[in-house]
Image 1 (cartoon, helix red, strand yellow):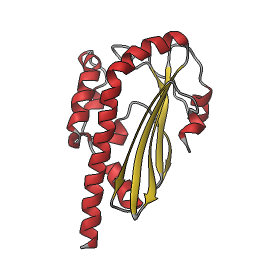
Image 2: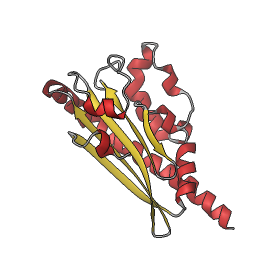
Image 3: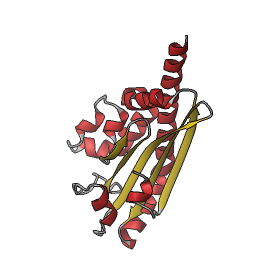
Length: 188
């Protein structure tokens, strides 16, 4: 599954990529093993973002030490071993306590979803064999379902987008360090 299959148009996009000196299967394993505890920037930024939610007594499951991919705010839509994982859902992230409970949507339902008051957010991690290693990339796309929501979300995005980008870079770096160490150990 490609992001274009779920959200071909978007209002906001971020993209990051990194070449890793390891084969795709090693990078894939490392991507799935990276835990929140190994991502200090992510933990601090997530704690700041979710502090109102945590103080209200909900959302405690977000702070457990678990794999990064299991802690994303949108559900898994697709996974193809050694190639890609795609996540997506409807959010009201700009709301102080996270907004209403989001609807459960599969990829096709998310593509068609137009209920006002939400943003549709999708994110992937994609692996591509390149120059004897692997290019690991991540892309995030967000589309508001109506003009009023786009206006509200634009202020939120202006504040969180740098942190969102920093989180992706931290994840890509953690995967690179883990995968390259494993590949080096296997070659020795």
